[in-house]
Image 1 (cartoon, rainbow, N blue to C red):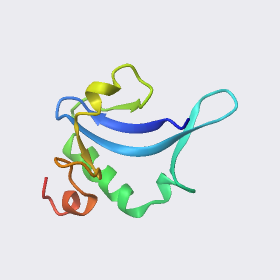
Image 2 (spheres, helix red, strand yellow):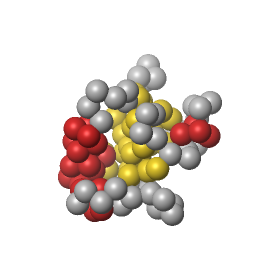
Image 3 (cartoon, one colour):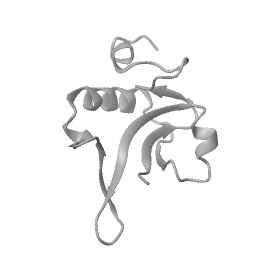
Image 4 (cartoon, rainbow, N blue to C red):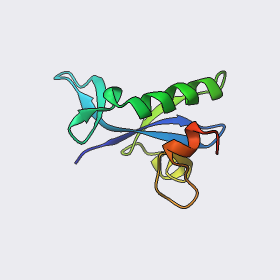
Amino acid sequence: MSISSYLVCPSRKLIIGLGKRLRDESGTVTGFSIGNHLTSEDPQLTQVLWKFLAETAGAELVVKFSDDPEFEEIAGYREIGGDEYDDVSFEDYLRGQT
């Protein structure tokens, strides 16, 4: 089972999907992937992440995983790049339409 990863801003109740967590032999997280590519190689996601970091400067940010006991609460947050009713697409987020 793959475990999804999210960058979370609890105070704003926002999340960004980072993809599947990648680990080395010792279990240390080494990166994230969506499909067959590293998310760090996705230009649009990179732009979204930098904007998110700027807009949440000073707020607590944490990386959470879908197997985390707190995930049920986090799953209810608004997702940037998500596909649920209240989520916001990457395109709209980058245009400032949140």
